[in-house]
Image (cartoon, rainbow, N blue to C red; front, top):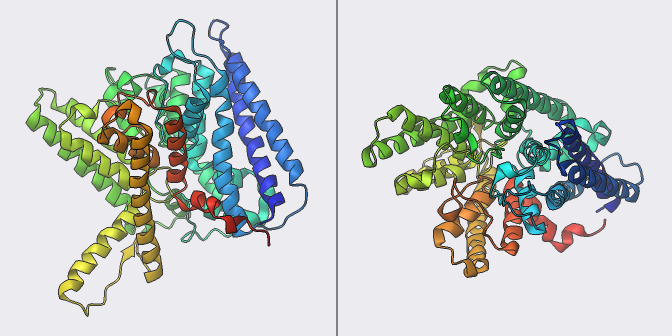
Length: 502
């Protein structure tokens, strides 16, 4: 392990992060004097501290390196996310809510939780009154999700051209993106194309919200957290704030469309830009995800109509569809409190967020491709019970899966489930003084590890994590990054042999 290489890349990453922080600080100065707060100081101080730390790391990594190894790439990705979460928390620690709002100032644990929830595009929050905070901080809160949704390391690879050959190691180990089917000759080029698609979706989504009556700030804040499938809204009632508008149905439809688009692998859009239209016919993940959302929303709609009734069936269908897409894509927006629906609907949504979206997208969860492999492997074994000599194989997106790839996926799913239940037990023990029930402990881990935002129990869509013990918040913050980087990239950092010099 060449620590200078790791230090140099981490330094450049922190400098890039500081620039985004400073932009949000300058936004506070652009507001009317009546709206200006200590947001500028909080963000400029945080940006300055992050920038100086980045310079220190760059100085520690002085030297020319033509290539970084796989181990160094993993170290940069894992530490990069941890460092990004820590430094992103500085403005949350310093900033104060509006006087007289009754909203408490965040302690360091709450600030780290909020920042990690942003940079991991999770969407869980400890803010009890979101609108009691300065707009500049809420903009930073949304921007962290935009950076984390695509993958801050992917953005880093795209804009830092000097990385050169080392870009492959960083891009490959940023868990959301696998480059096997992309024929672009250079990884940096692929990252740049993905970034351009991401920017285009951001612009189109924002312009649509502006046309529907959003203020420029609200349009920007919601756009950043929609295309990232993060779910941080600057409104206390989330998208439900707009549901009563005359065009509320159109707003929900527009936002749900972008949540669906960003739940499909961005590498699919890269391939389509190369006019390989036959890729659409083999895109099983995207079709399955869309079909899943339609099926679950109809089941929820039917259950509500049967058990609770209601004259406005179109409103119920809207709420069922929007909440299903939001949860399945791990965005976490809400237009209704689904804990008030029939009990089985919570568990349908729980399964949805556990499955998650497509690999290579901005979503969380296990990912549809892994779910399909487990489903088809199980079916294959059922058939082999009465036809032991049958030669079978599994295909995903038109590609035949090797035995080794199938073994790796099954191992990952087993480790994911084991990690999940161990985390539930740990949260249960840490929260004994709060007297939480099993559903709430389950919901906390589900919301954070799956990067979903809201959970079930006392952390549903109408609740927040403000009541959670400080050390539990730190543990849940760690689980957000574990889920975002899909276990291995974080767990390997705790293996002593990983850090040995060579």
